[in-house]
Each structure stands twice: as C-alpha cells, then as structure tokens.
Length: 246
Image 1 (cartoon, rainbow, N blue to C red):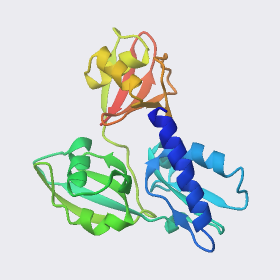
Image 2: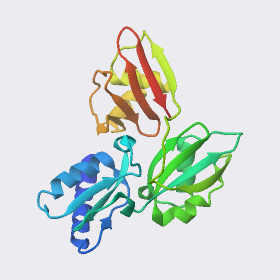
Image 3: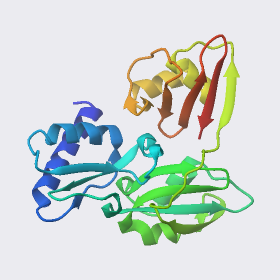
Image 4: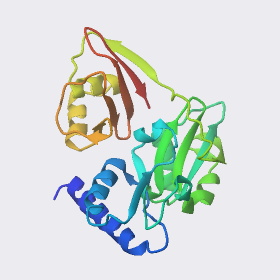
C-alpha cells in the first residue's frame, strides 16, 4: 500500500470515528492534507447523509481554497467556521532577519509539537501568519526566537484576518520548456533530477491536487512543492514568466 492510499484509509477511519462521536456535539479532526480531507468526506458522506461535514483551514476569504492543511468538522447540527479549534498566530520579525518556512516549522516542531497541530504557514515581507490547533496556543505564542532570529508573537482574530499578497520573486526565461520539472528546477534553482525526485515522492501539487506525471504547464496552473514553496504561472509562450512564493 503506498503512502497516499494509507493516508486515505486512515483519514476515512478517523472521519467515521468523528461521525460516531458527534451526537449532539461538533467533533473536529486535527490538521490534515486538504485534498485527502475532501476525498475522505466524499466517501463517508454517501452513507451518512444526515451528518454535516465541513473543512476549514483558517481563512474566510477566497485564499481559503489555496490552503493545503485543513481541519474536518463533523456534526448533526450546523457548523460555523468560528466553531473550529483554529487559532491564527502572527510572528513579527525583528529588523535583522527574515525566517523562512523551514525555520518556522523547525522551531515549532522543536518545541515538541505534533505536525498535525499545525496548519498552513503564510510568509510575508516582515511577518508570517501560522494557523494552529487551539490546544497548542500557549506554547506557540510564547516563542520569541525562530532559528537565529528574534520575533514577537500575537494572536489574531481569524474572522478579521486580512491576508495581503504574499511576497514573491518574479523570474522569466526563454530557454526553458513548459514541462513541470523544468519549471520547478528553474523556480527553485534545483536540478531536473531533484525535481523528478519531488514528483516521484508525491511532493508536488497543481491547483491543490497531487500530480504524478511530468505534464506540460499552462497559465491556469499553480504549482506547490512541499517544503519549498508555491509557483504561480503568469505567462507561457516564447517567454515563461513565473511568480515564486517561498
């Protein structure tokens, strides 16, 4: 059984457990991959049509669709987004540094936190926003260093959270083709062999769905590479232009 099939089976079983536990109360998972969450719900709700299923990652805007990690809510009653046990923490960097995704996630995991308590990490020019399970709120908000950088942390209201455009780097070239691995290699300065390894190890998504083939990329595609970042295709033609979000 490959890793994706195992995760799917495990998630379906967890959702079923939620169904049986939700009598008169809402029941929530921890954070899981959004694509697997959607597929698991599609399977389970066929047999439980009287149960409400909802997924949420922390944003109430159209950017919610781009979040990769979500919590599943299950209930016999209506579920509101503010019922979800999600807290948004804003880390503000000091003037001497700008931590990246690896620094931030490494610091949190280094505090003994399980990965399934952590949602998406959104990186901006002088701060980041992290969606976490409420059970770890006190631990996360007490963090004052990420890697070698000093930071200050504050809780922000997810209802009022405004997410500006994330900081990106624009790159363009007339010397690369439109193959997925070519664009990943160009975007993140890695070899095509490394890009193919990402594909082989299920680390790449296009528009939120996992891909397994080295397909040709078009302008409607958004590519996400786990642990590296996201690539938005701005132009495909004689020149390929991309925006890279790390």
